[in-house]
Amino acid sequence: MNIKRTYKELIVKELFKGHIITIYGARRTGKTTLSKEILSDFSSKKTRYVSCDEPDVINALTNKTSTELKAFIGNYDLVVIDEAQRVENIGLTLKLLVDNFPEIQIIATGSSSFDLANKINEPLTGRHIDFYIGPMSLLEMNTVHDKIELQRLLESNILYGMYPEIATSNDNKNKDKILNRIITDYLFKDLFTYNGIRNSKLLQDLTQMLALNIGNVISYDSLAKKLKTSRQTIENYINLLEKAFIVFRVTPFHTNKAKEIIKQHKIYFFDTGIRNALLGNFDPLSLRVDSGGLFENFVFAEFAKFEHPTFLDRPQFWRTTDKTEVDYIKASADSSKIHAIEIKLSENKSPKKPPLAFSNAYPNATFESINEKNVIEYFLKKKLLN
Image (cartoon, rainbow, N blue to C red; front, side):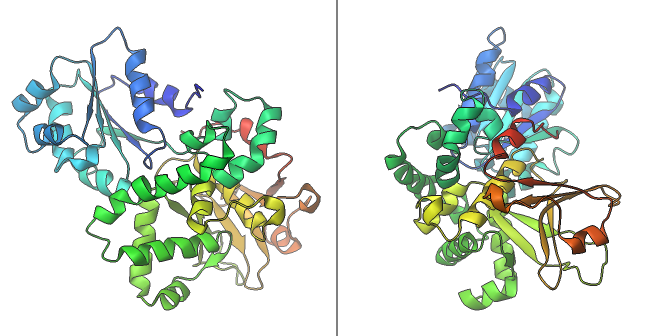
């Protein structure tokens, strides 16, 4: 099943302009496949793919002079360096390549931004363009399925998520096994080898607790108390989970109104299938007590697939101290333009207008609802923000 990745066209447009292209994303989300597709599209040029899972490749790229690097790279026009975060001082290596051989286009991929981004941001200031590749989006799935079929597949996509291996499989019986393998063999792999993780069990327990609380306001102090650790450790681990593209935070929207909460976060998973696998729960939506929160997470994850990886334009939620809430807020920097969205699984429960408290506070805000009946149509009209 040949699903066209949305970001491919954007990446191709940036090639051969004197920048390193960096592609981030969790393992098994299709970075390698996408990179190889780009190489094959440039058959008129000399291309090369190297994987930093190979020890000899790591050695050839580690602490080498520009002459040594050119000897290894060879006389190629377009080179993909896959899993580049494995190379020590990769930022300096990439800087030497782009400074000395600007005619060679380098694409570097990484499975975690805490590792690769930390190594390249300073050496490559102004010399790299970042892209995030996540699980499949509804817009991407539409390249092989029409709207009617996507509607039929909606519950399966919510329950099992949209990792490429999952989204292209018709066998629901084995999807849970695939997801468990992704979690066990890939998802936490970089985190468990990172020196910022001192307690792998705590990380797993925290991730499961976050999975249980999707759609709810999170208290770091409460999590720390339940897991018998410090608030700082909870903050650090959540930050690492976010940089490994497992979860992402949503912050509260506020304009100094007295009753608006301003500090607490919500945390969602980049993929609902991963979330359900962590809990071992793939029950149908009709049998779940968390169906509303699960659908909410699915919608937020779809929005995340269109955002810049650093979430410079991060979505927010609105909530008052008396728990009146709007699920999704998109606001301009000066809050002069505000768009509010309510997310409800059931079309019958979708409100036609926002809560009165929100309307009184922001009378000029626009509003709409997303539910299981219109979610497909909504995201097929969505455009990339980049």
